[in-house]
Image (cartoon, chains in turn purple, blue):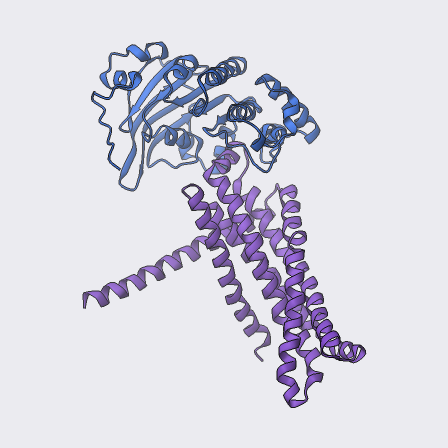
Length: 261
Length: 263
């Protein structure tokens, strides 16, 4: 009986910890966002983060999208060929890429690359007293370190998703035309016919939310890291895991809101 | 008749972290223009005391007055002008890795958050950073380097230049000679004394380096078990007459201070 109670108490404690942390993250995010409308704004930090997220993530996002589009085309072909429905492949590729694969894969790649880097950088600043030094130099650390990164994440990810959408569709096109002997003009016509502005718009809205969440997790875990190199490592892992889980959770919620009917 | 108001007055300062009591009613007066050294063993709360004054740690109880105003009772916004009076040299220098040396030195001058002093342009800040680097005995050309390219002693000098850049009325030094060889330690101490004298600042240094304490300080105090147990002239540190201070300053194993060596 005691073991069962201990088990239930353990679950309760874990849930309470999760609720407490969710509250802390929300307050941290709100505080950082509130600095957007309270000058000064640190443009140099913002531009640096924008380049780091938007430009330096391009190769990894581009390659991921290109191959994912190709894989969708191949997998669809193996299934659809049995029913002589190959003409639907172009539509499947563009739908999958613009609605899901573009934003989610770009988000996961950026979470792994940029979320980890943000957390490690800010975490190192925390454990080496650089954040305290900012405070002693008349600079609000959240305004200087977090707010510009949140804005950069929110703006950069939609840009990456546009690139991912284009390259994902191109990946499907290359596989279908070069490997499966589709007629290029027919494939392009089918792609254009299946293109929906709503899919792209919702994908970009998702990307903006994912970008915000990735930057928030990176900054939050880095800002609250403790205990030297081990603490920074733990914060980095937590940032990537939390960003990935949140990203997939919000992906489901947003898909439910926009596409369930 | 009351005497002059101390630059920093601390009364009944308490701070605990969980069950561990770090500061247990610290009282301290630091008069304007004085260099005050606080000594004490590792983990006795010296850094916590400085962090409380800087507002980086919120005390559990007690008051901290700067120029007669209790800053613990102020909101962060109203506290800011008092914090702008303080410059700090951190133990590890705490230079910003992502910035060059000159940007580190001039960071406070370019800080957009400065309310009560004029922010200066990047070009002027770079020139001023060069002057400050010269003041701490470094070639202004070092300004283009990254902090990671500097030795520990050079990083401390850059940290000192950054701390004095805004000409603060109060300077804090957190173990300024830790990790340096004795000669470099003496060089840093000399620079600290020069800078404090030129600026006419009030200084508080925390250290467990006795030679450094005597070089930097006019006054000294020892923090032990959360309280300042002795206060006097820095020159009398080695002959304080207090058995706890004497054991600490002479590094004796036997005495009233019991060191727990269990792990």
